Image (tube, rainbow, N blue to C red; front, side, top):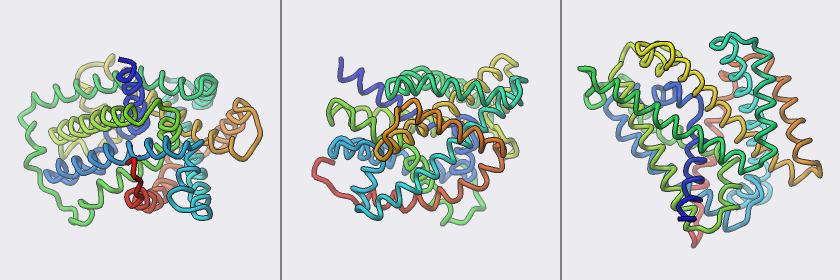
Length: 345
């Protein structure tokens, strides 16, 4: 029972780290899968296999080499010089994504809760600091609360969509996209998410009780991600092509059910932004601790102060500039992870 309990915590933390605001809103599933029609079911299964295999592999490798942060894993994958360079790039990108998430949190408060953008930023900064004082246990607790609600929300979306006459769209939709984009999509999606998730998956694996618990947790997490991807794709397909015009496709699906569910949905979007933010800040803190002798709380304050300052540029500007760069770097990183061999994996 203890093994299962630890594995569930690992699995939920894995899911919560992968499933961010873009996923919860439906935009990620739409862009990476649903727009490619009936072939998307196959590409989702490819992506799911990669999540099951490589997410577990990251955690097992971290356990084997007793990695203190994702920098240790990258040095192991790429060698000393290249590994530190890749870690520097990851550090910059994680810091940038943290800024994007904080800006997104401020936007949610301003646009949906009618609270000022600056107040939203400050509230989020304080909540992140509180969670960071609890370390990895704090991240596990937050994800254990958020992930079940996300799963419940996805099931509600599915039940709504299955009542439509177009519920079988996912099996018959055509696409005008070139085949190379369709085939590249699951690899881009997995690489993008795992490259960011390593900030939490590495310390999560390194501090796990044993490899069996990690593999069980990876199975739970990977299976949960698979179910949520398939449910999201089926639901969005049932509302195609009109759903593609909305910034928050899932919000449009639940809007007929009234304002209460819509508020719950927006709260969930904020929660997913928050889980991504705490994951990235934790990963940044872990890497900096290897180079700077400073109390973790002081490090967190410095990181959050930087993010707060840069977040003044706004959410959309940061998002459009940083994400394409991350996608390219992530593909190279994923290739190295796939090629790395070790007896225990």
